[in-house]
Length: 368
Ligand SMILES: [Zn+2]
Image (cartoon, rainbow, N blue to C red; front, top):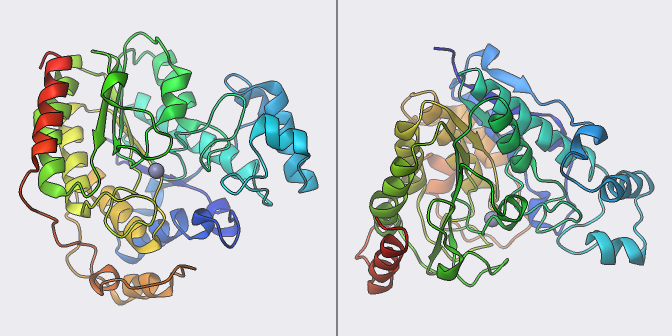
């Protein structure tokens, strides 16, 4: 069995959405650095993502939109019409120097990951996970949608039954919109209820197609673990996927500024371990995550799990130095464990009645 591959690119180190944007923080580059600092990888496991070409991108995205993205990147200017038609030049989807090259690299990242997985190698496409991207416009910090390309590529390479599992705090509206009635594709999403993009409610469930799990604010590890064990894993096992694409967004963690979910990284690490038990073929991607420390620690742990390595209990001085050097333009009142260890304290507690009710309703809707 080949060792897993970690796919990134230096473009994530040098590009930024701009000072005030949640994606102005280091994410992919800090994980790559942490993995090196903790000796969690052999040199031959790193791969650099190629940038997807416009001709390839046009297989999903509208030609006019791809042309506009390239033009706006070149001119660093969007007209009023661009803003209206393509949703570019907004607070969420700003104009910045790598606004075409960076998402095009994310598509290359997830496509390379899909090719590896189809060849029997597990892959972590760290730069991927742009689950809000739409065919003809930018949406929710996502200018393109790498996940759509990866799912299509896997199916084209003969892996017919694909399960897509989205652990991000936001609903994957771009992925869902791209596959309204795709055969042999099960889309599972846990996300915070009543949060942008305000989709994925109980009524947005279709047996064997869409399992949407709207989690109430404050959802903690004990509740998430129960949702995983009683709902996600039975639905997934029954579907019997040939491959699982996991969007491993980090914004459902406590101390992420963009959600009110309260998971510790233990719950998401446990979820990845369980998903790896469900299929030999797993493509993991990045996703949301807007606190530089919680992102770096979760994703570094994900990489250890993909390799079947224990997650290091102690940080090396170099790893500690990387966490210490991360910067954030938000007001900080963070606990010291975010800088001292990869492990969050578990957020355990009683299961609230609304979680029990949610699980029961969804079990009944999906005949589990
Ligand atoms: Zn998100």
